[in-house]
Image (cartoon, rainbow, N blue to C red; front, side, top):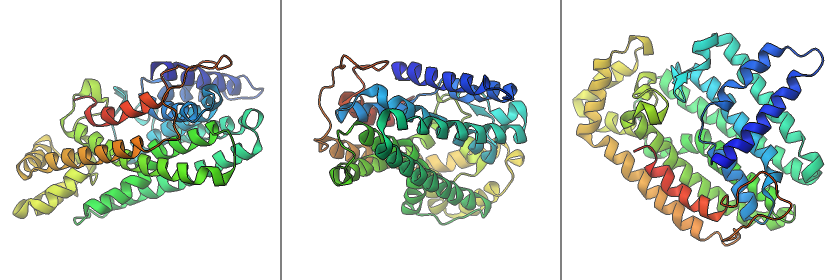
Length: 354
């Protein structure tokens, strides 16, 4: 991850510097573009992309442009999500809209998306037309799923929805989280690393990676929501309890609404309040009910079960090489970005920051 963070950070910085130095460029914008991408993020998405590319037999450095674009899309989503959710902290610092205001932060998010498109087009000279077009189609579908998932979650909050099943949550999660965080990085890595661009050769392995990324992504999101309730600010990087302040329909919140009996109307009454009007005592009340109803334990149990399923799927991915030593012509990548990293990622998703 550290190696990936270095390579991706350098690529993004070089891209921003190139844009900044163009004649007529408005340089203050590019100064702001470096903020979120260069904060101390985990770099999971780009590292997954590079790892799959190498494990599929390709060279890691050929995936770095695409991996960097994924990180830029991720940060653009974060900037806009923080505004939509009214979040106050991101990666241990103030959110961008808290620092520069909502209108300017929205524009920085838009500009971050534009940077990502430019990086993807650079694949034409290194990967060729066929693979580049396949990558762009994957990105288009990923973006569509992400905005649909975000719309579902925002609608639930706006309408103060009270009856959301686990399956409803899974559907939203697959769209909002799984595609851009796990499925698409896996699929792009395979497209880049596979020796051919033939659609027929890719159908089965892409389907297997999609299922793996979907199951692991749901587990990741549930665990992220658990950390929002129980994590430590220093390691989690976001405010603890923020999801309740925002009214986000997490697996645990849906569970407590469904199982808290006479307390459910009061919980919904609290959730209907604007974020700024919710009190710490009200948040503590909902947390206490979650503990009494076993809602947090429910989330943890479901996440572990899904992680075990992901591990079984991963063990069946025989098209990923067990060892991937560096090739002489590979540049700026690490030899451990391979099947081993991807396998260990499953436990990381469940046990991180606990």
